[in-house]
Image 1 (cartoon, rainbow, N blue to C red):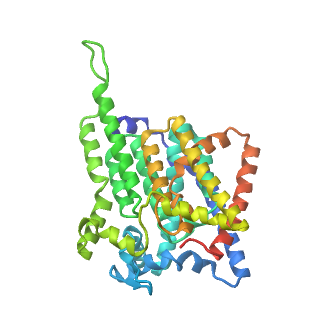
Image 2: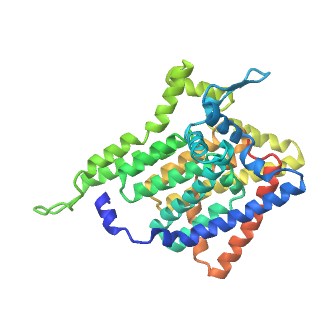
Image 3: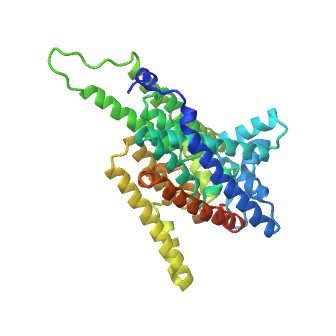
Length: 395
C-alpha cells in the first residue's frame, strides 16, 4: 500500500476510536500508581523517588544535566560509563527542564507518562489495523496489566522506545515509509534494541519491493497504479532507519577511541554482552540448587516457554513480517544478553506483538467477562508492581 492509498483509506476520528483504549490504559496505570503510593508509604519510602530517582533514572538525569563523560570505577575493575545510555530521553529531559520549571527528574517522569500514552495509542493502531477496534482495546489493556507494567510510568526509556517502535511499525503496515524510517531512527537513539525496528523496516521494505516486481498481470494489461515516487520513499525510509543507532554508536566509538566497536567496550564495562543465552541458562540452572530456588527456576522456564509459544502462535497466524522480525529480535536480545537477569522482564516490555493472539482471544469474550479478566489482572499487576519496585525492582 502506498502513501496515497493510505491517505485515501484513512478514517476520521483516530483519537476518538482510540479513546476507550487510552482511557482504560490510564485507569489501569492510575491503579498501579495508587498501589505503589500506598505500599511505599507503609514502608516509609517515597513512591515518586522510586519512579524518578533510582537505578537507570539517575544515569539519564545525570546525562541530561552534565552531558556524557561521567563514569564510576568499581573495586573489581568494572567501569560504568554513562555512554552506555542512549541520548533521546536525556535530550527530552533537558528540553523539558529548559522550557518548564521542572527538574530533570520531573521532566523524565512527564516524558515517560506522555510516552506511555503514545505507546498505548500506537499499540492500539497496530492491533486495530490488523484485527479491528475491539482487539486494539484488548491489546492496550493487556500491555497495561503486564506484571512489570509499573516500568511504563518510570523515568526509564521503555515507554518512549515502545511508542516510537509501535508507530514505526504502524507506518510500515500502512505504507508510510519515510515516517517509518524517521521513527526507527529516533527509536535507535533511545535504546540499543532500536536495531529491531530498523530490521523490521528493512525487511518489510525489501518484501514490498519483491512483491512489486513480481506482480503478475495478463498480456496487454496495465499494472495496478502506484503513487509516483513510492519506490523512492521506500528507499529513503530504509536509509533513514539506521541513522539514529549508527550515529550514536559511531560517535561513542570516536569519543572513546575504540572505533566502530567502541560501544561494545562500554557495554562490557557494565558486564553486558550477547552470549546466546549461556549466562541466562546458567542463572536458571543455578535456581535448582535449593528447594525454594527450584520453584523460581520452574517459573523462569515456564516464562520462557510461554514467550516461545506466543511467538510460534504469531508465526502460525501469519502476523506481518515486520512484526515478526521486530518481536523476534526484541525477545532474542532480551533473553540472550548477559545483562543483569532481573532486568529481563522490563526489556521484554516493547515486545507487544506477542500480546496480539491473547488480545484476539480476550476480544471474543463477552464484555462483562473480559472486563472481569482485565480487572483481576490489573489488581495483580498493581500489587506486584508495588512489591517489586519496593524490593529488588529494575536495575
